[in-house]
Image (cartoon, rainbow, N blue to C red; front, side):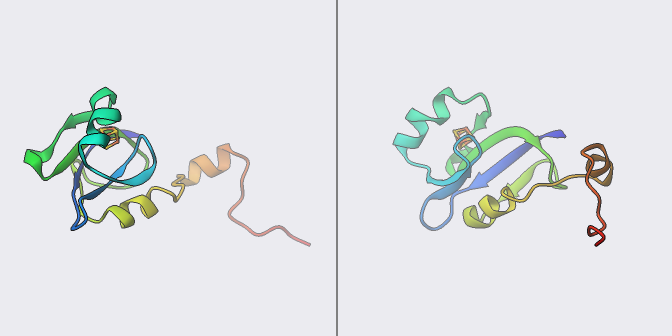
Length: 99
Ligand code: SF4
Protein backbone atom coordinates (compact mmCIF):
# COMPACT_ATOMS: atom_id res chain seq x y z
CA UNK A 1 0.00 0.00 0.00
CA UNK A 2 1.11 3.50 -0.80
CA UNK A 3 0.97 6.52 1.45
CA UNK A 4 -1.46 8.82 -0.34
CA UNK A 5 -2.41 12.43 0.31
CA UNK A 6 -6.21 12.72 0.36
CA UNK A 7 -7.60 16.18 -0.26
CA UNK A 8 -11.12 15.95 1.12
CA UNK A 9 -13.08 18.95 -0.08
CA UNK A 10 -16.15 19.95 1.92
CA UNK A 11 -19.43 19.23 0.13
CA UNK A 12 -22.40 21.61 0.12
CA UNK A 13 -23.24 20.50 3.69
CA UNK A 14 -19.68 21.03 4.92
CA UNK A 15 -19.10 17.28 5.16
CA UNK A 16 -15.97 15.26 4.41
CA UNK A 17 -14.96 11.60 4.73
CA UNK A 18 -12.85 11.04 7.85
CA UNK A 19 -10.53 8.03 7.67
CA UNK A 20 -9.90 8.01 11.42
CA UNK A 21 -13.60 7.68 12.22
CA UNK A 22 -14.45 5.85 8.97
CA UNK A 23 -17.53 7.99 8.51
CA UNK A 24 -18.79 11.13 6.89
CA UNK A 25 -18.38 14.02 9.32
CA UNK A 26 -19.12 17.73 9.38
CA UNK A 27 -15.76 19.46 9.22
CA UNK A 28 -16.63 21.94 11.95
CA UNK A 29 -14.72 23.26 14.96
CA UNK A 30 -15.78 20.27 17.06
CA UNK A 31 -14.38 17.77 14.52
CA UNK A 32 -11.19 19.77 14.15
CA UNK A 33 -10.61 20.21 17.89
CA UNK A 34 -11.74 16.75 19.00
CA UNK A 35 -10.29 14.62 16.20
CA UNK A 36 -8.18 16.37 13.53
CA UNK A 37 -5.93 18.32 15.88
CA UNK A 38 -4.61 15.10 17.45
CA UNK A 39 -4.70 12.97 14.30
CA UNK A 40 -1.42 11.72 12.87
CA UNK A 41 -2.91 11.76 9.37
CA UNK A 42 -3.54 15.52 9.36
CA UNK A 43 -1.55 17.34 6.68
CA UNK A 44 -3.49 20.60 6.31
CA UNK A 45 -6.81 22.22 5.61
CA UNK A 46 -6.72 22.70 1.83
CA UNK A 47 -6.77 26.48 2.13
CA UNK A 48 -10.01 26.34 4.12
CA UNK A 49 -11.77 24.21 1.49
CA UNK A 50 -11.52 20.92 3.40
CA UNK A 51 -8.95 18.71 5.09
CA UNK A 52 -5.81 16.98 3.82
CA UNK A 53 -5.15 13.55 5.31
CA UNK A 54 -2.27 11.20 4.51
CA UNK A 55 -2.79 7.47 4.94
CA UNK A 56 -1.99 4.16 3.28
CA UNK A 57 -4.60 3.48 0.63
CA UNK A 58 -5.06 0.10 -1.10
CA UNK A 59 -7.30 1.60 -3.78
CA UNK A 60 -5.86 2.44 -7.20
CA UNK A 61 -6.07 6.20 -6.67
CA UNK A 62 -3.86 9.08 -7.74
CA UNK A 63 -1.54 10.89 -5.33
CA UNK A 64 -2.89 13.32 -4.34
CA UNK A 65 -6.39 11.92 -4.36
CA UNK A 66 -9.07 14.61 -4.48
CA UNK A 67 -12.39 13.61 -2.90
CA UNK A 68 -15.22 16.09 -3.46
CA UNK A 69 -18.12 13.76 -2.62
CA UNK A 70 -17.97 12.61 1.00
CA UNK A 71 -20.63 9.92 0.64
CA UNK A 72 -19.00 8.36 -2.43
CA UNK A 73 -15.61 8.49 -0.72
CA UNK A 74 -17.02 6.70 2.32
CA UNK A 75 -18.60 4.02 0.13
CA UNK A 76 -15.40 3.53 -1.86
CA UNK A 77 -13.52 2.96 1.38
CA UNK A 78 -15.87 0.18 2.52
CA UNK A 79 -14.83 -2.03 -0.41
CA UNK A 80 -11.88 -4.29 0.28
CA UNK A 81 -9.22 -4.08 -2.41
CA UNK A 82 -7.03 -7.17 -2.79
CA UNK A 83 -4.57 -7.97 -5.52
CA UNK A 84 -4.82 -11.42 -7.20
CA UNK A 85 -1.67 -12.41 -5.33
CA UNK A 86 -3.24 -11.42 -2.05
CA UNK A 87 -6.22 -13.67 -2.76
CA UNK A 88 -3.87 -16.60 -3.34
CA UNK A 89 -1.86 -15.80 -0.22
CA UNK A 90 -5.08 -15.71 1.79
CA UNK A 91 -6.02 -19.14 0.47
CA UNK A 92 -8.95 -17.74 -1.48
CA UNK A 93 -9.97 -18.81 -4.93
CA UNK A 94 -11.63 -16.74 -7.60
CA UNK A 95 -13.47 -19.86 -8.75
CA UNK A 96 -16.79 -20.84 -7.18
CA UNK A 97 -16.72 -23.97 -4.98
CA UNK A 98 -17.38 -27.21 -6.87
CA UNK A 99 -20.24 -29.41 -5.79
S1 SF4 B 1 -7.16 14.61 9.87
FE1 SF4 B 1 -7.70 12.67 10.81
S2 SF4 B 1 -9.49 13.13 12.08
FE2 SF4 B 1 -9.27 14.82 10.60
S3 SF4 B 1 -10.57 14.23 8.85
FE3 SF4 B 1 -8.47 13.51 8.42
S4 SF4 B 1 -8.48 11.38 9.15
FE4 SF4 B 1 -10.24 12.40 10.10
